[in-house]
Length: 483
Image (cartoon, rainbow, N blue to C red; front, side, top):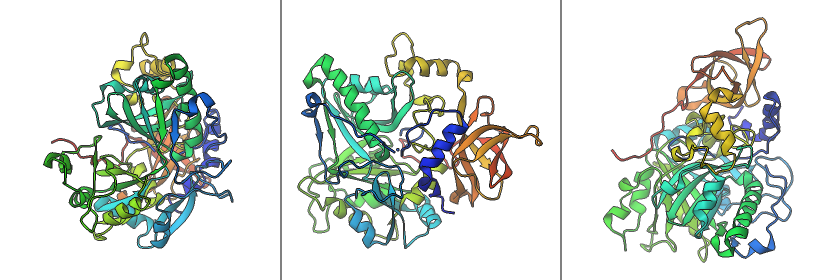
């Protein structure tokens, strides 16, 4: 069974997970970077007339009218296509429905495991243009983002990023996870999950409209950058693939030297095309990713240059001994080994950041209950102060040899083997390619069973298999940092 099976079964199993943990049924969705940084919809957002003039949605790959966004789907509803769809088909991709888009699962030149290991050893290029790119600016941008996220965004220097999450007011549940980049004092670029498009747009619309009603129409400008493609070049050879392509005209050597671009930083740079000319637009190159490897996410404008995503992709794939295309299957197993969450599976509105072992996204200077104003602050800060009050905790599991523990598998306490007691449920699991096929999994377990070394078991194919709670990640991240 392919490791991407959890994607195909996402909707039903996430509901089963919620039921197993006695949690409210949560919307299903899709990315999380770990500590160092960092989806199905049902109702399309209604943008009020008063706000519409201050929200720009540039769409080259729009959703079909009345389309329901899905995290993964086998329905006959029309699917959106990224700007690189034709290239995927030409290169032999197996295309599958994912988050309302027709996306590549894997390619004919490499199996899932081969593609996974290629990323760990060389460099892979992922099309992540289905993700939703945003730009928020204006004098109220920082205040708005500090209300809807728990991060210390005012501490970010220009062109630096942090993993964060959009929080539900009152409960502190995670509406989505996102990576937020501060471009300037009052300008922010951030990326949210494709499968949470509808929920995120509705949430942001309501929050922005409420802010503008108090502070004026010019306090915020929000753009959904749907005219941009997004690709991720990941792996130890990523920098050596990208560096020779950087156009050095009109930049200082330090600006074009990728060795000085560290994890969590970004720059706008041009690439050099085969004819020696520069790309039509500068590309926003961020040193980040979703695999645990060194790498870059590259945002590619298409206004007036619709072929730019293909041009950039072909440049990055020119040396097939170093870089190749990779799809959702490898992306899923890579992120799990790196201990990174998948929205709608490992996190949802049913969990707060502390419950999901993501309490570190709450800025240290934002933990004073007297001054904390972000959504759900009272709940989240109470949990951080008294972790034993959190009903369930996200953990890693090593599962004994045999069939892997997939999403929805029940976790049991086997202190009394004759009467195993249900204490949790698996949210992601597969045989780890990097660990020789060893079975690994993420799960939520009841308070008290989350400590490293705790002996538990999982029910797989009606058999009980031993499992041990372990720390995450399984494969240490290799992010490029100052030495």
